[in-house]
Image (cartoon, rainbow, N blue to C red):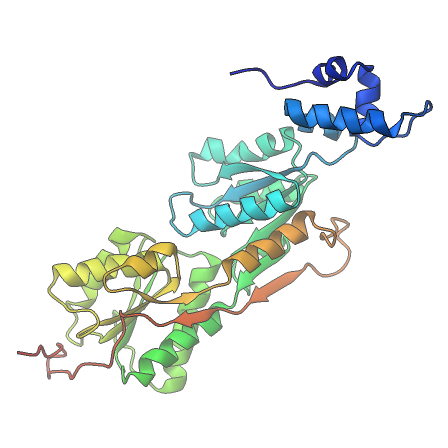
Length: 356
């Protein structure tokens, strides 16, 4: 691999002084007039050689480094793959490159993230997911000199003192439950994950809706499990052992729903004939599940775009600390697919009645 082109390489190829190249590429004022033809030639040669100004050198000159830091709560969570892709595209449109960090690494690595991001002179940092599990990292970021914007920290959460961009979790859960009750489901369980802001809000919205609708919520209908395939499997296996089995389940994430669908298959419970399942997020694999997953879709691209705009856009949030922090909330949509159907008749023992 050849080494990256330097400013000296550009100067040698253009036949001008390195200081002239620096002034042209940085649009700096000059005492000696430089012709437009020379400016055009220098910029063309720089492009041809693939010259890129070093971010640290730019920062030392007081110019933006054009680096956007991104800290992901859990890089193994399938939800964050399209989120990172959207962030990279939105950053690129604004001329930024993304420096990616993973908050769910070892504790020492997580705590070192702030130093790494600052050393690379990031102009701003976007947090993807609630980082409440790593309070020291959050505190270090709060004390840092860079602008920080938090995505998916919940609408009622203050993003640890950062501006936030979120989805309306309550509206999404209510839309899913309205869909299930319209299908005559009256025994609806909830599979949640951990204590992150979004998950807490989705669980609270489920409890609120059932109370308002006068629907029974037997003991054991709320299952808190790790957010993963195995968590969904574990939760559904427990629900199927209840005397009053649910006829429908709403999950806090699509990945939990995938686990529930798999456990239903392993236990010979037909989805959706005997059990309807609804997810939340609409990750890409939701449309490829068997059956395809009914789920709450959030406007992911719009959320990421708003976060990047707050971080580095023309209307970027000020770090002066004056005024209320921006808190943007986006409305989700329910995507109805094949994992939900009309409630099956219930036997006295609470088990779905199979057809012959």
